Length: 197
Image 1: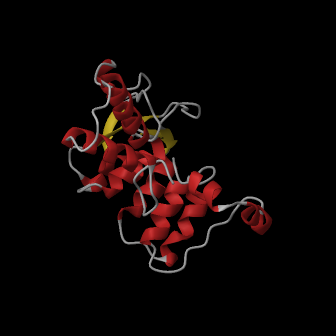
Image 2: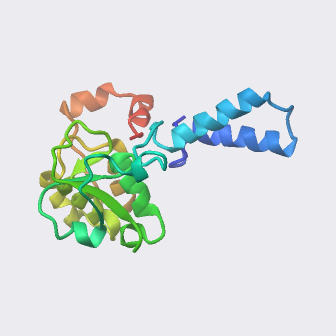
């Protein structure tokens, strides 16, 4: 069982949604109001990538991080060299945007941008990482994937690996820290547990 609704595995989020739907339809005994509210909040927390307090809240200075120097469209970001891009829920959030109608090209979608070092800031990624993930907004083939090694900073989230693997039209290979011995030491639950962002 996984946490979120992605893929064909049973998920906690889907189970909570089914329970709440049955309760709303009167198919099961009514849940206590506090319990229902807690289950809804837990489901929302899971669906939001386990991020309880995003910096883009309406109440927080117009939704902008204090370090934001500009809010830019994707086409404007392509013209920048260096810097950091703020995306709600980081790489996982960017992958969700790629799956939405219009994706990155949606004319109203703006991203927070700064030249300040945001290494320790939540939801911020280097512009090179943003642009590397953004390239996944088109059909993927194994020939296209060579750029990922040099353009992404740090380890790849399992959700990004899954996103690419599902869309790749050819075999997709992933290097694992520790090699074959490390992979053989993993069981299915541990691998599925790494699927979140």
